[in-house]
Image (tube, rainbow, N blue to C red; front, side, top):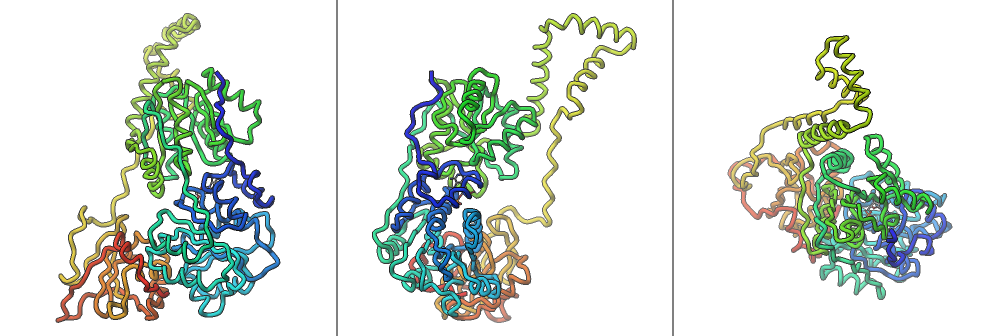
Length: 586
Ligand code: AMP
C-alpha cells in the first residue's frame, strides 16, 4: 500500500503572489504553508477587495491581513497607509510585533503601536518620524486624530481586528467615526469571531461589496478514534509529552507541531530523553522523507514529529497515537491530523494539548466535529514511576532469554565467591551501571507554593451597601479592591465604556475586572488590588464621556450615606451594551 493518499494539494505561500521579501520572512519564521484563513484571505486582499473574515485568535488571522498589506505598501509615502484597530493594548502590541516579523526584509518600513496607557511623547515622535503601519486601540487613535497628530488622509488599508471584542468593550462609536473619517476608497478588512448584528451593519455601511470568508471545514471524524485533550501551559508541554510517552501504551506516534523549526527542536529534545524520534517537514528532501517513513513502517522508528504539510496523506498502519502538541489552527487540520491514526480499521488514539488561552479552539473543534473531547489528566509522578518499575521488570525477563546469559552467569558466580557479595547486590550494581548515573525514578513534584493568605473558596455573595468594601478575588484568583471613579448615571456611562477606557489606559484585561456598580454621580469598580503607581496615575487622568474619572481606592461610604445601586459583573454584561452609542473616552 502506498504511504501517500492523493489529497488535493493546498496552496503554498509561493502560490499566493506575495511580495518576495515577505515570502522570505515567512520562511524565516518557519511557516510552512498558509493556514486556511490565510489561504482564503490573502488573494482577495491582494486583489484589492474588502474582506470580512470570521476567525478567532490562533487561526493565523494576523498574517492573513499583515502579509497582503506588507506586500502592497508604498515605502515612499510617509503618512500612514495602513491602520489596524485592535480592542486591547496586548493585541495591538502583538499585531505590531507580527508586522515587524513579516517585514524583516523590507528595510525602511516603520510600524508604530499606539495605545492607551503609553505616554503620548513616544507615540508623537513615532508619528513625526513617519509610520507606514499604525496599530492602535480605538480610543487612543481618536485622541490623536482630535489632536491633529495622526494624519489618516492618505490611508489605503484599514483593518478591524477582533471587531466583536471592540464593540463589546464600548468602542462602536469610535470605530464608526474612524471608518467614516478616513478616505472613502480605502480597503477594509474586518475580522471577528462572531457576526452580531452591529458588525453586519458596519460591514454593510462602511465596506464595499466585501468578500465574506467562513471556513467550510471537513468535520467528520472516524468513530474508531478516541479523542482526548489535556490542559497544559505552554512551558510545561515538553514535560507533559514525556509523561504521556512513558505511560501510554503506543505502537507508533505522530506528534504535530506548527513550524519546521519546532519539528527539529522537539525531535532532538525527545532523542536526548531517550526516545526514538525523527522530524519530517516540508524542507526535508523526498529521499530522506521516504527513508524516515520506511523506518516508521518497519518499527525502526516509533515517533515522528511533523508539520501538517509533511504528514498530509501519510498512511502507516502502525500509528496508534496522534498527539496535537501545538493545537491546529482550524478544525479541518485537526480532522486531517487525527486521521493519521485508526488506519486499516484499527483503533486509534488522538490527544490534544490545550493551553489555557486556547480553550476557544478546543470548543471550536468540539462544535465543528459535534463530538466532545474527554479531558485526560496528565499521568502523575507515581504513574510514571510505576511504569518505569514495570518496564524494568520486563527488560529483565526479556534478557533472561539472551544467548550471552551463560557467559555472564559464570562471571557473576565467580565474582560472588571472590567478594562474598549477595547476588541481589550484584544485580543492583549492574542496574546502576546501566543507568549511567541517571536517576531511575522521577522526582516527586514540589508541593504547590503556599498562598499568601487564606481566602474562602467561594466568593461570598457581596453587596456594596453593607459597609466598607471588602477585598475579593477575580476570575483568575487575583485579589481585587474597589476603586471609585467620578462618572456615574448622570454622565450616562455604561459598564462597557468603563471597561473599555480603563482597560485601554491601564493596560488591563477584561478578566481583571470584578463588579461595576454605577451610582448617580460616581461608580465603583473592582480592579486588581496591586495596581502599580504608574497605572493608578494613568487612570486618574483617564476620561470617560469627556469627564476626568479621577480613579482612587474607595474608602467606603461617608457616614450617613447609604450604599446601594446596581451591581454589574463586568464579564458577560457587555452584550447588552453592544449597541450603546456612548464612547469610552480616554
Ligand atoms: P494568530 O491567530 O494570528 O494569533 O496566530 C496564531 C499563531 O499561529 C501565532 O503564533 C503565529 O505565529 C502562528 N502562525 C500563523 N500563521 C502560521 C502558519 N501559516 N504556519 C504556522 N504557524 C502560523
